[in-house]
Amino acid sequence: MIEKDSKIYIAGHRGLVGSAILKGLKEKGYSNFVTRTHRELDLSDQNAVAGFFAEEKPDYVFLAAAKVGGIMANNVYRGQFIYENLMIQNNVIHQAYINGVKKLLFLGSTCIYPREAPQPMPEDSLLTSPLEYTNEPYAIAKITGIKMCESYNIQYGTNFISVMPTNLYGPNDNFDLEKSHVLPALFRKIYLGKCLSEANWVAIREDLKKRPVESVDDKASEETILNILEKYGIKTRDGKYAVEIWGTGKPMREFLWSEDMADACIFVMENIDFSNVSPTDSKEIRNTHINIGTGKEISIRDLAELIQSKVGFDGELYFNTSKPDGTMRKLTDPSKLHGLGWKHGIEIEEGIDRIIKWYQS
Image 1 (cartoon, helix red, strand yellow):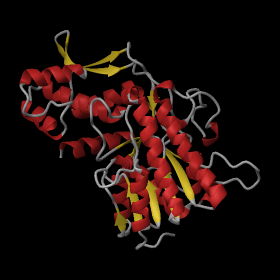
Image 2 (image 1 turned 30 degrees about the vertical axis):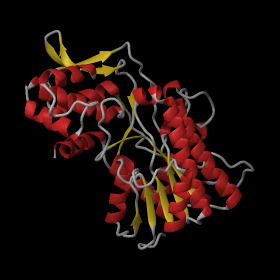
Image 3 (image 1 turned 180 degrees about the horizontal axis):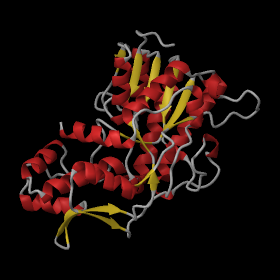
């Protein structure tokens, strides 16, 4: 068990994942945290990370910092996604080893699994066939992180654990219309569609004040705002207010409430060592990572209609079938985590209610 006054470094403490972990640790009575914003510490800078670890000497590390995005961002910014994630991981994991960190938790993503992986996806399906093309650079970076943790554990006797969360959503998510993941993007588009259909310009401008779209904020003209919303598929279509959604709506996705994910991460950090997930009856040590998910899935169409119902948008949902669907199914097999003693608590319907309440507050 971790002592309550142990020094804990959370890399990426202001993001969706890191902020949920920090909140969960505080609720459990931990109090000795070290954090740095990106401006204070660029994790892709090898010398800066080395200096930080040498000075702070954290006991435990949650590596939640990453360059992340949805299907559009992953496909467009391929070079950035592989370079930045590799640099962040290499620097933090290596310095954790150099400076004697007791345990590190590396957070990846279930996009590490092959496009044609069996469904649900068990941990041992890793590297069995080709990846989904659109997120291949990001996935390769995350696979490298898993292998780096495994390799350091084998060679140096470190205690670095890798967890692979499914699609996450919750407080402090990224709601950028270009770069966010599917659920926050759908939610914001449908919310803005509702505001537009009601001619609620006060709410639209308040939204843009907090989260400008490209360079368009609350001070822009109505015409400029309408143009940028139309660019991202929030518009009138055949005389009706409509929200455009990429693809057919048929892909199935699994979603985990971010605070559930944080609880799972803290559970693993407190209770699970590399020896608990490393095979003892084999010469080859691989697939020691742990899936974090619900084992339940919903179609993009059903998700959009659920959000539409809960937000109260009476316009049209338009599925643009000329756009890519991405992987058709991406369901995790969380049986390893269940066997270790943890299961999720928040179902998707309750989670959508919570995100609406959080976003509007």
